Length: 495
Image (tube, rainbow, N blue to C red; front, side, top):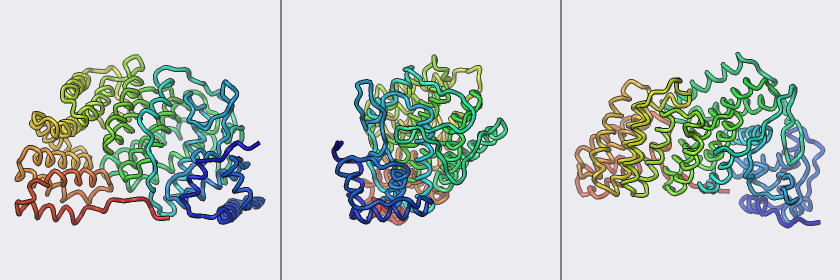
């Protein structure tokens, strides 16, 4: 009986410009390259997949995901193509909608390995991510709310040997030419140290140069998680996966791969859940909120921050400094909406939380949120609010200067550059073009030292703020310099 057309597959197929025969030939060719010589896809089968919702047997969905990923220049998974077999719901029906209950650990590992594998394939071919729709904050929040706020948690049974991973609704081991086996404490400790190295590099130079290495390491960790380990060791592995997924997401955001970044943030939250670490999940979701704010979607960011705050409360073991960090992101969202009173209130709470003592050292993923980072976030928040409330200007100037002073010896060049752009922007807003030019020129002198698209986006915003002074000859000259070095906005890769 026909299930009706597969609209997800049809939509992706339409973007490629292929004929059904071309797709069939590509599937057979790619399958043969992967050692699957038995594939004999033809036009009629492609038609049944698209028009009647027929789901082909393994490995065809994975082959299809690979060919669509390569063609469209962005990660496309089997779920994106509507080729996942979903278990029946409690009412006996199946649904392709994202599940609102937590993923099982095996499914989290499957999604992680498939997504990173596709991402690595794009990296090998030097493709750039095409634009794709970002999920709204409410959609992410709805799908993660229950388990991040204390809902039911499905526990994975610890068992030795290869763990079956849920692929298309059945239990099939994930096999490849190379399959990593179980690891011990020394190997996990080495992975934890590697995360620290990647994190320090990202903080200094931006995400462009190390993103592929982080994604590759995350893919390896996903393979490790398909095996059974002692519970304590498995929790550490899931924490490594969460930390790497956040880094992969942040680096993807830093270079402008926005849908890819969002998927990594959600994967990070899921991995943190498997580690039973709700504060880590909350921080991952706050990264998705910061991404939304960078893209001008403050309402979505607030939706996400409600979830992040709920999942990282004192009862969940969240430290005051973690909650302070979350408050700065929420304050940025409030400032973006022009809510002056709420902005001041939330930032005040952040300051109070930051100075509170904690008996435990901060987790590794919070160690970069120091006094300089607090001032940098406060400067950004007040600079954002200053476009709605001129009274925020003195506060923005004070915090930006303090952040720059404190970062002089921290090795966080990208953050210092963003602070410098913030400071210049505040001077443009406050009507001080001479001071704005000084800071803008300092920013221009160092912006090529990072591989961060976010810095160029912020510079573009600063350029916008200088518009009302373009009649001044020296400002016009500066604007010409900025315009000459700004990269052209990147659109979708042509098919």
